[in-house]
Amino acid sequence: MANSIPNRQVICDTLLELSKGDRNIMVLASDSSGSAAMAPFAKAYPDQFVEVGIAEQNIVGIAAGLAHSGKKPFVTSPACFLSMRSIEQIKVDVAYSATNVKLVGISGGVSYGALGMSHHSVQDIAVARAIPGLAVVLPADRHETKKMTEALVQYEGGVYVRIGRNPVEDSYESENYEFVLGKAVTMREGRDITIIAVGETVRVALDAEAALKEAGVSCRVLNMHTIKPLDKEAILKAAEETGYIITVEEHSIHGGLGAAVAEVIVQQRPVPMRILGIPDEPAIAGKTSEVFDHYGISAANITKIALEMLSR
Amino acid sequence: MDIIELKAKAAEIRMALLKMIHNAKTGHTGGSLSNTDILTALYYRVMKIDPTRPKWEDRDRFIASKGHSVESLWCILANLGFFPEEELKTFSQYGTRLIGHPNNKVPGIEMNTGALGHGLAISVGMALAGKRDGKGYRVYCLMGDGEQAEGSVWEAAMAGAHYKLENLVAIIDRNRLQISGSTEEVMGLEPLEEKWAAFGWNVVSIDGNDMDALVRTFESVPTVSGKPTLFMANTVKGKGVSFAENVAHWHHHVPNDEQLELALAELSAALERYKQEGQVQ
Image 1 (cartoon, rainbow over the protein chains, first blue to last red):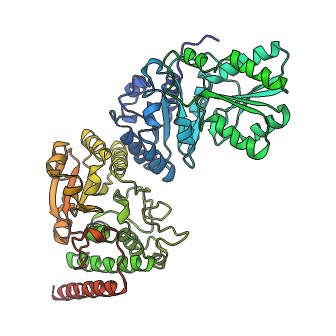
Image 2: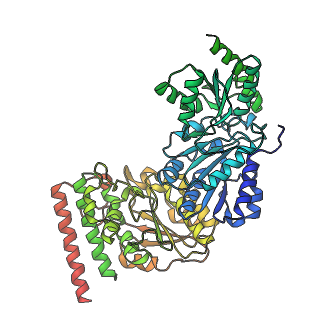
Image 3: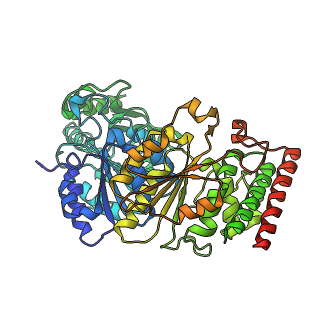
């Protein structure tokens, strides 16, 4: 399970591989080719790489122009700036104009740790999923990041992707599973309660499931890697079959995965539900694991909440 | 088209857009009148386009970054046959494709614009793709002068020069008025040409309502090798309609019946003059 490859490097490696047969794949960076781990791509395919400098509005507009001309641009830029500084370009130039731009927010969530609220990106899902037509994807680990990148090269349309900065522990044993944009992956089957997680919290959810199993609880774990379009079917099935739902995310409790799931549950199949994430405050500084623990985004806390919900 | 024919065409387009705005009871009258000559020169003479193949790969691209002045563009695209002229009657009406900003569901429109400060970055992307793919097309981007206050314009200006996009042409409709008054009162822009030159562009100043000058300068692109071109098109807001000329209020004002009649009479007289001049030639 130990892994030393960050997801941003996986994206670069995958795009390098896919670019051998596709000269339309392009990577754009905002003085971020190093932090996005895209330097090898820039070196290997200089004609398919564009450095835009520290200009997040510009990077999205240029990407839209490239996409309009048949290119498949991947914009790589820190999630905090890409999702906020350039949101109008994302709305108008990408979503409204229906251009084939992939927006990859790197070092998202709280993975910039000690740099504080300016560099944390825990509102990005809320912002991105309010834009019509924009898909929103957060891969769980290196295996999923690879499969997602392959799928995104094939997918025609605007997508916002958020990944973290550091290597994450694997959630999948291998790439031997099906990744379909918009379809949740059932990581563990279960009857009593469902944990729906996304991105790096999938690992946390799996650890909680293991603890719950010890306590005799049959827990389902859904990896909702695509927050938009949301897999409503999997959510309603979980509500129907397990009766209780907990969502976990590295994002504000406002407008993220939990809110998206709640919108479905409340309108179609109300069941008891809890939303775990970052509360409405500037997130505390620290390593990702420390921040997670601080806000109860941990296996221990999820287990505790699940047992409380089930004992009522 | 020769210069006289282009002048006559511009008068016709002005009449069409005034009727359209009057019919819809909404529209950006002043800016559309000021940019009509620029668009007429581009669409009827300068740009390589084919109305029967709106997505022809080698076409020149036009981006209306000042998307609010779309009325002249709708009238030109209809006149060229990109869509039926009859459709102009639906402008700004419920459910129409011809909304108050460029909409790429309409043939001939490349991208949706309207939020100011977006068009040049998009144009940089298009020109960069063309350059890297060895294509011969040019990208023309029309901006407003008030729009120059958007910081994103200057991000894109830097990139256009950095990537030496000589296939990129930016045009500023320098009519000196924006919705709240004079550009220099709202947010001073001068010395605007020096700013663009300092950003690495080749700057050419022209009278943006002089058809002869417009055609001559557009046909001289690229003006300097290895540099994008900026045409500072000095225009008159409300051009061609005496009572609307240089009046900020007409930025987003609709002519009433009487004003429409007066404006059409002025433009008809101009049109007649061009026709006679054409015959003399």
